[in-house]
Image (cartoon, one colour):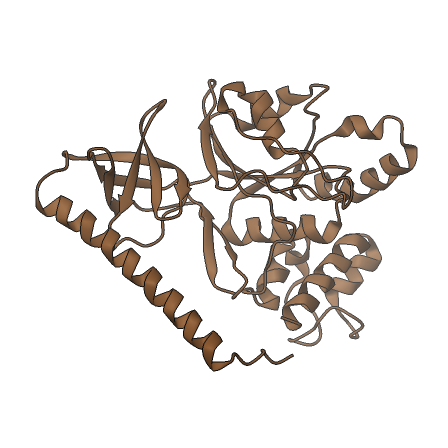
Length: 337
């Protein structure tokens, strides 16, 4: 479908807005540079980005203490979890350098440009719940993204109390999550109301974890229970749509008393992977790896080709039908992007 052509006035308005934004950014950068040049800032020190607020970031100076900072113009975009070098100002500091990253989680925006979500993370906590209804395709998108970043994912089935009196829902959810433990993915069950958080707490100790999942699955509620002092906002699930309202507007990092940190990210209903090739998606399904390269045809799509090693593995039970279907849906979405 071709893009709608803008009228001359609409094009003029778009250009004017972009020019005004560029001027505002230039003024902010100029102010930061002037402050640096005038020697009005303190000495350089290291810090941790614990939240991002558009053109500014909150840099943690010591546990419990943070300073709002401008970002120097020559620094690429910062995300929660970045370690930085910054200088104290009055009242606003300036970030002057970003230290090397590891464990960077990225996802594409609506234009297909890769954007980092969090940095220096050790594991991705994928939270699902009976409501809003989870789908294997969405779960597998998170797992493929984690595999591509070489970050260990942990699946958390929250709100398990909803399954107690609903046999049909319980059977559906159990069938949905059953393939993952056999693939080596850790699966934890919890509820913000009925406990079961001890296993999750143990998995979070001494690690930097990012929480991802659909809005409404209870990410923020879990964090509030684990760390009441975090005071993160909790929103009610929309009864009309059975989809969560977006209550977390920026990724926030909080520390656990026993060690380790959590990053709560804005809720996202679909994890876009259209920046990835079909071969990268294949590698993201860990049970596919022993069979890749053994198909008769080099460009095998694993659909109905003769002598396909992946299809043979599926028939033998080494690859579940659910996961194979997820793979095909993801590849189809890439080709339709």
